[in-house]
Length: 129
Image (tube, rainbow, N blue to C red; front, side, top):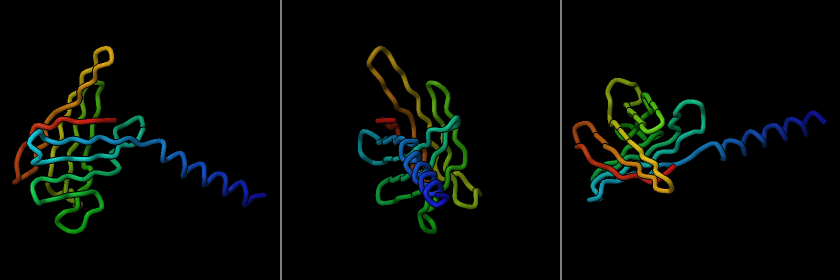
């Protein structure tokens, strides 16, 4: 009986995590840069996955060596989101994402800026969460 309870608890935790995330996809209108983020549904903004690209370069949470990033800090207010991505040692900011949203009746807009250190700054339009 203990095994059944433990298995049920484990499965409920696994399936609960799948429903506790959302995604945001942003890109600049010229297709020069993009960012894809997976965020957790918690009382705070938790960035659990991210991929950033600009030209031929790419960075990601869980990436290898020079392409590895972590979510250094993240903040969300009702109409604003700010995320700083750093190197895994948190020694320098690799990218900054600043998003602003507006909602009126059924219309929703999400847009902002993506700045990648030593690469460039981009105006981005987003979809999600």
